Each structure stands twice: as C-alpha cells, then as structure tokens.
Image (tube, rainbow, N blue to C red; front, side, top):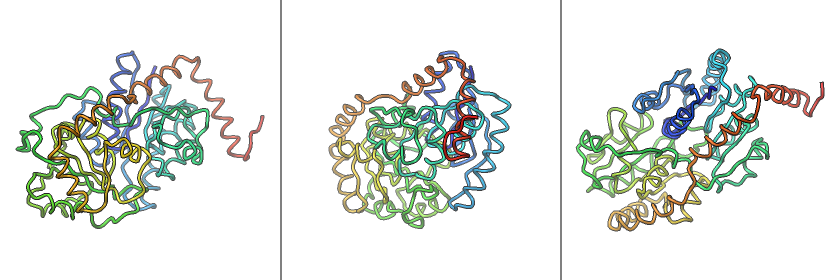
Length: 370
C-alpha cells in the first residue's frame, strides 16, 4: 500500500521524518513530494529522505503565490495520477488536499495554525481526517470548511513529532566553534507567509541583539534581505549551509524567535524559548504561555531582561519544561494510527464515489442524487 506525503516547508521535513520511518517499519510504501523553498530539499537530503521536488514558493505577493501554486497543482497532479497512492498525508498544505480530493484519494491532514485562513479554506473541506492540537477552537476549523466528523484533537504540539528519534550531534557545535550551553539561537519573522502582517522591512530582533552583547547568537534568516540586516552584528553567527538545527537548539541556553516552529522545537527539546512574534498569537502559543513553558513580548527590554533571567536559572527552567512536555501526545503516533484506520477499513477506492458526490454538492450548492 502506497502512502503519499507532501512536504511544503522546512519544519515539515522534521515533522514527517518520524511518520515516514514508522510507516516503512509497518511495510507501507512511502512516496514523498516537496518543492524548492527555504533550503527544504537540503534538509531532506540531510535527513536521508528520498523525494521528488515539484514547484517552488511563489514569494510574498498574492499574484506570485497563486501562479506558483497553480503550476504546482498541475504538475503534481500528473505525478500522482501516475503513482496512484492509496492515502495522502500533509500538514498546513493548500495543494495536496485538492489533488487528493480530485482523484478520490482519502487523506490525513495536520493543522496547527488557525490564523492562516486562506490556506485553511483550501485544505479543510477536502481532508478526510483532520488532526489538530486541542488548544485550537474547533469552531475556527469549522468556519474554514472542516467536516465536524473529520476532526480529531490531540493533547500536544506538532513539534513533538519534529524531535522524534532525535540524537544530538556534538560535531555540529564544533563546525561553528561553539560550546554547549554557551549561546542563544534566534529566528526572525516569517515575512513571506501570507498570514504575516507585521513589519517586513525590520525585525524586532535587531533591537534585542544589542542588549545581549556577551553571548554568541546563532541566527537563521529566512531571506537574503534578513541575512544582510543581521550580518552587521559582531556576535551573530549565520550558518553558511544547512546544519542540524535540532542539535543547536538542544545545546542552546535559550531560543528567541519571531516565528513559531523553532520556538516550539526548542521547548520539545527542553530548551527555554521566548516568542517575539508581532502579530496575533496562535492558540498553541497561548496554551504554552499559560502552562508557563513559553514567554512572549515584543518589547526589546522585556525580552532581554527575561533572557538574562532564564540564562541565570537555566536548569530550573529546563526541568519544568521537560516535565510539561513529557506529558503530551506525540503526533507521529496519532497520524500513523489514522493512516492505518483508513488503510484497513476496506476498499480505499470506494472513497472515489464519495468525493464525486462532493463535487456535485459544490457544483449545485446542495446535495444531488444523480
């Protein structure tokens, strides 16, 4: 039986590596597709995941996103028609769900960003089983077209899957001239994301770094423009090639991020994190703040003050974080379980008639018996 996994973004490579390994252990054939974006193919190469790359990111404009997505759907559809997978699997993905729906392929999707409304409206209505972290209000999913019967919540965050089977590699530190627990990791704003409505020209981290002059800072820019903005700081190190970010997060004193994924990966590894995201906070971020394992501020002085406190009391913070994170569910287990339910529930191709009837309902605005 063939499972198709479409990987759209760099964090998704880590998210799905555990799912891929568990599926292969169970005898499933796995087809991985991806696109050219943010060093994604380099990360897949580093992880030893075989893939077929189709398409690229469309940039920050709506026109660019639409054209790139349309082209990718067309090219990817041709591949999937040829490969004939039995089940589609994806995360925060607007393209694979439409292809799966159009070809009558049942699907398992994971979502943890309820604020990406345009993307979610292109994903939820076409997803057979939609898995999401419990802090997200199910009503936000229903508003974007999710079928109430498709929903399954989990008591955990996506990034627990990202650290599946993780073993730190000390050689990663040697390559960058670092010592354990002697540095901070930073990640600026996701300025190309369609849900981001903050300042795309200047990062809040540019005002925080001068307040932390005594520690090396490993920074991962998202664009060339961001890279140029941070190269002027003497204590900032920007890796020139793809590196094992999980190892860097594991041995860091602290993670400070204006995005989300790396902050939560740090927490999943037991490393304290401060969020400086300038927009509306995700439900999972609010939940982690309530649990006392994550902190948030867009005030540079507040961030720097909290950073020095965490550095001084680092072992205390790590102990609390690990206690909380160890009680959470792992998305890898839930996704594999849902795939197996679909795989062994009977003739998967019987879903084709269900999807065809869905097309008629969309076409006429209500259900039609033909």
